[in-house]
Length: 351
Image 1: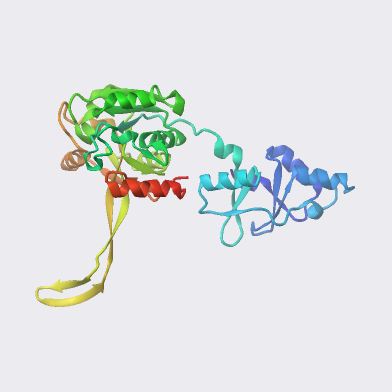
Image 2 (image 1 turned 45 degrees about the horizontal axis):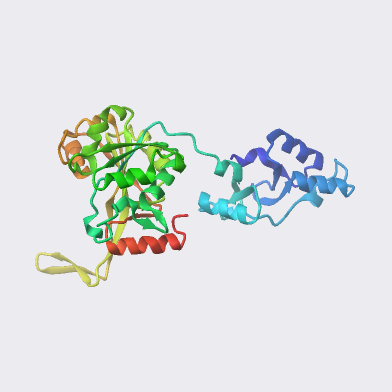
């Protein structure tokens, strides 16, 4: 929330602080100096205790201020803020910059409140066979492989819900009934799930033609075999601010370390050498936002991947935007990735 409504100077009285608390209804005031640096916090409980000790209403706040409140810096994640507040039984947490100035006040009730729904459906592409993960996928479809004790697709659905996406379509093909039986109608996960069956594999985009009439506002499309903390709501906001483009692709920077010295050459001359350089490449994360006009370019009944759609859009002179995903992301497509995903969840990287 905007913290300025809670600001009082150190010279304020108990009466003024109580009036500010009554007006805002937040249960506290932030005591700041002229540069917005936090000097302390006075809660309604602190003020009541001061009054019971005999302090008059027109007395200064000095006796009621907590001068060493818990605070966090701007980089704190909502999940970490909630964990800290629960751990220490707080309901509020000031966010400060490096100079100690107040940026905002995090409130536990607001962080735990469900976000307003986004007005687009999410489509989870869950029809793949998971060949690279055999024999794990011989009996279990890849979306139901458990990471940290929970099926991959359930982790994804819960994160979609947390970002305000409650209408979710799941495309199925391989071992589809097992996925239906596990997820049901989605009520257990707090969402509404519907399914569409591919009679034959249609790639990462082809199945959208089977539900075209339900995608009039566009769609967020996500592969079922990824783990991510991507802020889908922020991605949607980015997409809308771009115009919007026909398609926005989520990209992540993939680092490759070359274990040799790399030469820069011109003909047969060495211009420079870089010892064991590390390269960064923007890669496809399997997360997309599509406008209806982009979906209309997908041919019906044909195997059609996201790369095919991007080529078609660019060839038609349509715009494709790239949204940088800076949060955790992993494609759980190989045995090595699956093992790492389990370690990452155990270490709390998805919290």
